[in-house]
Length: 338
Image (tube, rainbow, N blue to C red; front, top):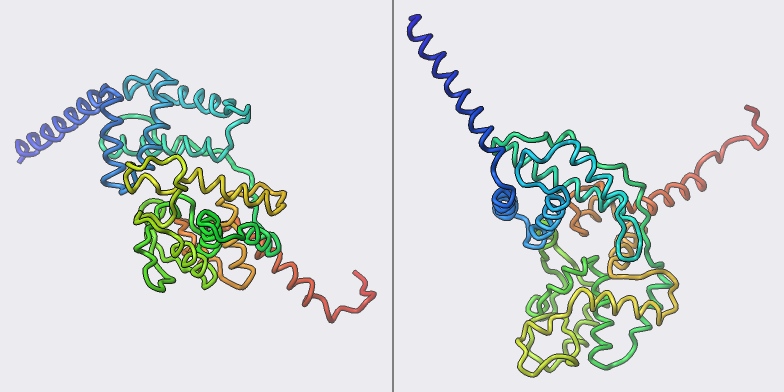
């Protein structure tokens, strides 16, 4: 009996020693090799989009290059502390400091990487030891009804590009789509009188979107004016495209949509800085003002967390103020003493 116990104890000790040896050797794995395996994990096991994988790669390569990180052992708390100071003091090409949300994005990517290391038995810093910075409450910019109508009027005209621009504005406001989702739409999705379809958004999540009658009419006018067979729902103008260009070359870019929206806002005399996401904010604000609950708005916007949708509470807060003013204290005497 004692002999068996001794053998069992020796086997346990051997396994423990092997595990320690494995951990020690794992910490010496070159960073380029580990980064490659991590990005494959993000793409395959976490199911992230190619764009997300590309972002993770860019963020991590910047950190590794800045800190001259060659091995896992080179990642220390002191290195991370200094890197966060670097991010906090870094400026862009316009001399502007990085937003706290952008800095936090870098931190989150690093935490995902460290969590991957821990999950696979590599000794490194615990991701829980790195906290994100407190971010000031976000203020969203949206258009009121009068500004929206002026934006629609600025799209007046019957030329193909003008009809396209009107359809873009109408669809953005009708659906709350992100600009990256808009440019990825295809004509076949809008065959017939379709006013409802599914779109794949961030993280590969699929959600339904609904087209208003007004947006559908604007789309129909634009598609009727098109003479091409390009599969993209929205295409760039012919100018600048060679006759031999492939069909997919004419799909409109996010940058072009941003420029169209900005120029139309200027034409409409709107003093705010207007971009495609402003119309997404306007879509959410319009829903809440008209009585939609925040959970439904979350689903329509494709937000993974209700916390993200809560940036629109400025609308519900105003509604609560109106209710309080209209209904509270109606029975109190005029000269009530405290």
